[in-house]
Image 1 (cartoon, rainbow, N blue to C red):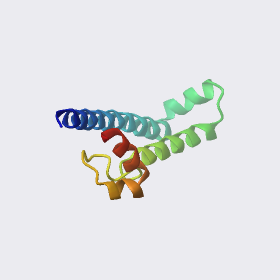
Image 2 (image 1 turned 90 degrees about the horizontal axis):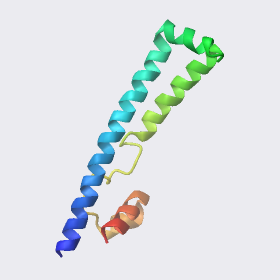
Image 3 (image 1 turned 45 degrees about the vertical axis):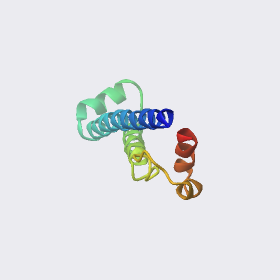
Length: 103
């Protein structure tokens, strides 16, 4: 029983670390995307590097799309929980993975 509790605590700690790192990554991506869209200095740097002006805009939109896809609402809604019921594990792909980790 102690092993199962310890395993659940490790999975919970891993989940918390994952979401903290993901939040910092998303903040960085959204800040650089907004800077690429607004600052004329970055537009000049992109043209200096030989990229067309449209690439800067496309790259910014791709970064913002990545931030949206990494948000918790786009993922499994049970990822922050440490206990998962068997019936939940059968209906959600993210829960199936967590259920296998908790076993």
